[in-house]
Length: 451
Ligand SMILES: [Ca+2]
Image (cartoon, rainbow, N blue to C red; front, top):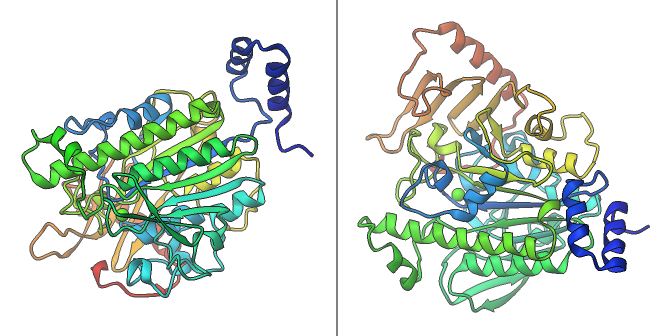
């Protein structure tokens, strides 16, 4: 059986037979995405980029035209969440489509990429799911789901046909890329540009069969490494950390521009679902900003878990949408599987929602009744406009856990604690969280950073 869907084959043979490429392009556009086409899935993730640092979200000192183009061509989620406020558990949630607290991946594992532990091997990853659906699967960039040098935790062992891992120690030359387990030197001037070059290659090499590609950038996480000639463009920014952050985000955005161009040049733009989000909010010191959200990375205040989040799928998801309904990165796997026409058993295998019915106007019902977080002693639940949280604000001295009830749909900065005025709401949300928490297990390892 051919791996090229019927309508694609038809268009391809028309194109070859007639040479009327403009006619075929028009025909393809008119049909939007043909039913038989299973889209490519491209998920791009920034590391520690704050909610405010997106042009489409009002940022004025860092240009992000390519990220903004994704929002313009598709959707910008104003309440887009990750499932944890730090790197590793956030990625564990994204890559499994499950609350990572269900399987103990609650905290950053010790020693980062040198860990002896990692994403539990009994957990099925997005790459495993997509590979079963005959997708080609690729990983490029950061990993942080276990030591990639250990056979059981490497990206290749977790469902990825191809992996180019970039260790995060530095973003400047000399760069090391670990391709399918074998280290090699990369000659690029900045690590995110090296990732874009790899993604460009992947996209051009895989045009016949649908693919799933996870591009995991290192910007703007510390260290604040920047090529001097690029940083010079931001010399008007006086705060050094902000200047370096602007440089890194700008370089990442240009890298994303190269990846989007590869999709266009290879004729795959309309059959690719593209997502970009940050893996957690900005930390206190990398120059990125969460304004107007409260607090930072490492907390279940909004500044830790609400992130820049945009998505496009031309011809299927209507363009120019700004969606305020809460969504979470756990939704991405289920949405990708729905797009790939994979049936998911209703046995609790996945926690996310398929976003397509909501984004295409087939339903007005928001994707979620409630979203939940547990991160060590911190917790949060968001249901509709409301959020109940017990969280740590690292900017306060001394940092201390605080509880509060906020109408976050109106009070994104979590300034107005309504717990005393609405005890019944506190009780309702706490009960929701308690029921959800019964599905969680104890953290598999400890992390003193968690509080
Ligand atoms: Ca991170």
